[in-house]
Each structure stands twice: as C-alpha cells, then as structure tokens.
Image (cartoon, rainbow, N blue to C red; front, side, top):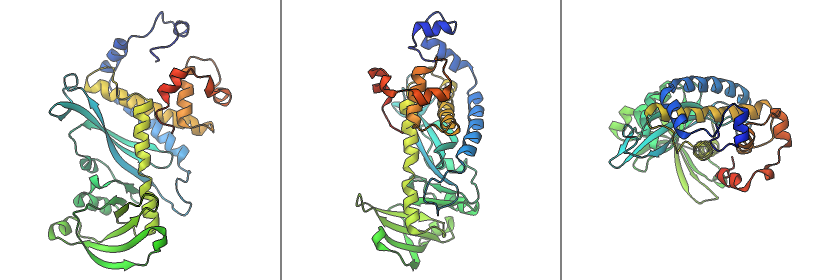
Length: 330
C-alpha cells in the first residue's frame, strides 16, 4: 500500500485518508511471517518453470547453476535488541541461493547478524548435478566435501593460506587469460582429512582488470575458461541484493519484532517474484526495474496490465519519483 497515494485514489478503495505507518506496523507484528514465506515458495516454483528453459550462459554450458551469498541489513540496537550483531549495532543477514536462470531466489534464510556465512552450508540440501558458485568466505573443506559427496559441484576461490600438492597440469590457452589448470590435493594432513579427494585448481588473469584469481572446483567437465566465466556470474546475486534494498525498501522496517522484520523481507521477495513472473509470462520487453517503477505509480489504475506496459511512457513519471527509484537499473 502506498503511504503517499492521492486521496481520491484512496477514496476509491473505501479509505478516507492516508494509511498510517502504525497501521502497517501493527499488521506486520501480528501476522505470522510464515504465511508470506509459504506464498513465496509457491511463486518460486512458478517462476522457475517459466525461466527453466532460459540459457543464462553460452549455449554449450548446460545444467543448473546457483550463486550463494548473504547480505547484512543494519538495524538499530536499541530498537531491534533481539537481532544481535556487534556490541553497538544490530543486524539481520539474508542468506540467499539464486538460480542464475532468471535470477530467481530459490532459498532464503533470515538469521541474526552473527551467523557466519559458511554455516548456511549446514542448512542447504544440495541438488545432484547442480553447481554452486560462492566466494571464499564459504571455503570450509569439511562442508565442501559434503557438497562433493552429494554429487553436486562447487566453484569457489582458494584462500591465500591454502597449500596444495600438484598432481597433474593440464594444457591451457594462455591467450584466454587462463594461467594454469591443475589437479591438486590438500597438502597438510588436517586439510586432507577434511577433503580427502582431489581438487581442480584454476588460475586466471582477468585481461580487463589485470586481477589474478585462483579458483577451486570439483567439476572436471567444464573448461578452465568456463569456470572463470561462471564465477563472474556470482555478481548476479549482488545485483539481486541491491535491487531488493534499493527498490523494495527492506532497509526501513514497519515494526520492530522479529516477526515484523521477516514479514517485510518475505513480502519484498514475493513482490520481486511476482514482477519476474509478470515480465516472463506477458513477454514484457522492459527491465524489472521499469516494470516495478510503472506499477508503483499506476497501482490504482483500471487498465489491463498488458496495455499498461505497452503504452506507458516512463518520461511521464514525476521527477521526484524518478529520482527515488533510479538506484539500480536492473
């Protein structure tokens, strides 16, 4: 519900005036957040079917690829004292698994700010044959071996302190930026107990930035260059977090309880998924940002939705609304 809607539009809905923030806060406090979580999972199922045939990468790369990461939402400690994080700050973490076909969030876990990212690997159920792309904050060899034993794949970056024994070196084309492609084993006894199998180590230099990266994976089928290119798509989940925080206002909460915070987060996820579904199902040739922007100023209009998106001119939106919603063009 738009708090700043024109009075005449609110009157058409049977409301005599603007909706107070306290009214929304009370609703978020009282309604169980799991209602919206359940609804979100239904939307996820529908969205994944719609985007299931999309080819997110080069056509020769087939399979299911997920990006795993988290984002921290800072809160005021005196108001949200249940969300422990630091001595003077509160926060919640949004742990997310993103299907890179359509950037659809398939798993979301809301924790307090103290939960370490790597612990989410204990909660996830790994899909055989799928590939999980994550940064080196998730490098824990015991947990990575559990991914491997589940017949799933992972692509991550090696920690600087990691020591390996090289078993084989494979031929590479250095003109692509790939420096080496090796089969390795953990060198130390402790690390080898945690991950007893061999690993694949790929060293890659980005020709654009000049930065050098060392990747670890248990995938033997992809080329070394494909592994490096796939890791770049981990940025998609950062885009998702920025989209959620920027456009769906999950940095300011109406209500202070855990239930209120989780309710607003899950409502935001539902909104994102509904926009993604509408875009795909109606074949709308606009970005998700544009669709949300149009909906935000026409939610009370009695116009067929397909006509709305085909005829709407974004230049007609008032400058202050444009300024508010142009945080990220995604």
